[in-house]
Image 1 (tube, rainbow, N blue to C red):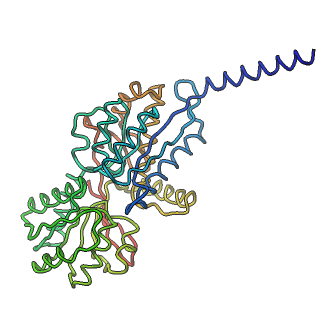
Image 2 (cartoon, helix red, strand yellow; image 1 turned 90 degrees about the horizontal axis):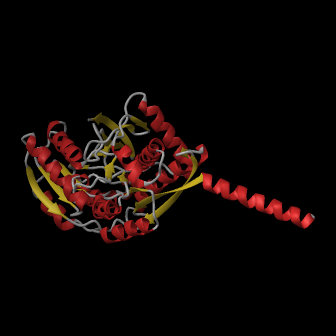
Length: 380
């Protein structure tokens, strides 16, 4: 009799477990960023933004289509390399992810976007700013930051109007991001009647800039713009000081990090660097951003570098679309994601246009004083 009872209890327990499992929905969110290489500090910052969102969603007990969702983060490293980026994208597609937040760089996001498009999987980049990213006709491609047309153009106008730049030199690292933002900066300068005295290029792994900086020094520049990332910008600022070039140094969001003063090793003068970050908060929104930064520091024992809040918002917007659609299936929630409007995120209000670009994207201009980043203004 006892044996029979045990069998009945075991069967009931198995049935209950099966029933609970049927009621639980596993949702896989992919994240890709360079967690190795020269900008690994930025890649880890991004990944932590995704991890923070996933942990919060699981703690909340989100329900999708009547089932409790269990969110899993599948994190991949693309090392900022386009080939590695497409391999990582294919790996996530093969793992049947429900959506992807990433990649960090434009140079990896653009080739990876075709892989996701072919598989019908939504992709939201928190930081790819090259205009081409959302102009390929893919329905699966979105971003939560303003693009280089806005970012580079704004910095170009600022160089002429506010910094009174007369002799302006431009250097880029020949990546999709670096060259793209430098081209838009040049257009912004010319649009305000300014001109470019020198245009030079390097690469994103370079460490010695003596030749190009010596060539630029001869032109006696008052502004030097660099299209690229902080890992190269820091040593470049150091070598400018060694060569006696005291020009203002400008760049986009790629250089606008908390690490830049360390990478420049004390060579930055107060107010010398002016950079812009895609995104920006004003007024009442500042409180939620400050809370996010404090919570992030507590959780990871690290300060936000640049993009973690955008990764967090991108993840939350994606899941919000799943909840509204009542499904985590890409084909079902994608049309809802595309119609996102008025989502109140940590980084501001998120709404997408017909290309998947954020509407009315903000930019924040920063400088550095006492090796700390200081906000100049939020512009739209």
